Length: 320
Image (tube, rainbow, N blue to C red; front, side):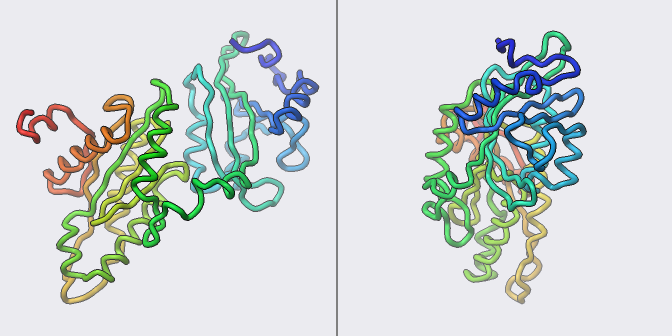
């Protein structure tokens, strides 16, 4: 249940009603408090923090965020998806994103919030805290170059496994996580015809395409032989499908070196997806199931995606 002092009333936000209490909480936590009303699309901040130096209330909040480029473009779509959600979560939600206020450069922020339904009005509100974590991320070993592949700038598989298992142990049954494996189709032939140098250029370009196709909060990794891994936390299944289709469209856009040996190579990839907790609740098991789904895509002549299917997997393994 939500305390009375956190409940909003029609026509007035709970932040406006309880500025003194919120101010004390903010000083204790060193965070800023916010509230977002989905029905009116209005964003409220407590008096301690004015994002533009003037206002604490923002009607037409989504338009304000877009017009003033508050949220980094890489996270904007995902952020708007969050604000549009009408799902009530019992547990606290956490999101990290880049934003800039009052003409500053982009900084990293952490949003911790809960969704609540106001009994009096029946409307849904997001209530929570926002904190600047830019220094924290710079100092964190998770965000140093250790564990990063020097060729692609993507994470090593061992780091993704460790981070994903940690995330899976924290997520509740109400959250969906996804593991996507993808491999460039006919990679051995590409490597044979273009040579190591050109192949590395291709792999780097594919990595760049993946970086622009996923959220910055997603874990994107590279292993070898044209194989890539993406772990996505707290993401609806239809968004996973959308990301897979986006990747399938982006890969052919990679420029292939022109040479007589390369001929007319058409770049594509095969994608396999496993979900948690539907398919498994640990990374290695998800990896094996995503790998099975990826080979199903290969069996379909590549350039497609497949979700893990237990019946198909049993047939692939000879009924075992």
